[in-house]
Length: 156
Image 1: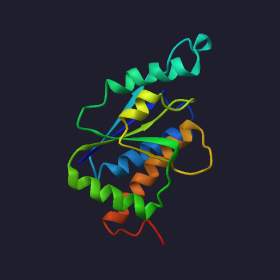
Image 2: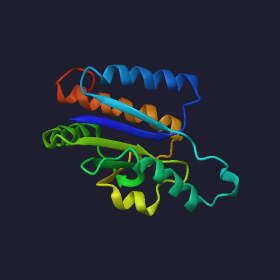
Image 3: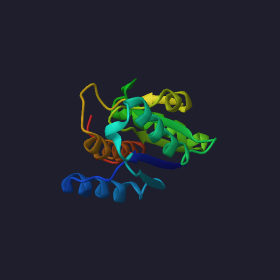
Image 4: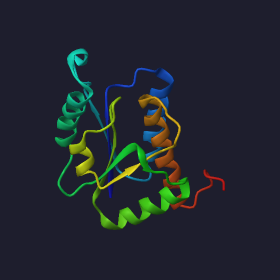
């Protein structure tokens, strides 16, 4: 199984970028992972949120393959505990599809993107900046990998 992450825009906060790079480096010891950073939609001042979400979806669809299992990180998705996420990833590994996690833009996902998704997942009922979600999500992926391997990173 391979994991792909897709998100919009570069990370501009240094400590978050360092955290992202740290967790990506750690994850590569467990699973093949690729990061796809989309350019931000340009000239958003004249665009409605719906148009902006559609333009983001156009870019995302170019990176998604028909057989991919697509998970949107969305505030309305299910909220797994870390151990549940690990169990879920372990089951998905059996399917040998590429697992694609997508972090949307500031307005979320277009209806077309939600229709393509296999499921929605939430990291918390709290709201985080999109840049923070990137690092938090990668940490949770790393945590899940260590749980699967029975390593002592996670304490329960």
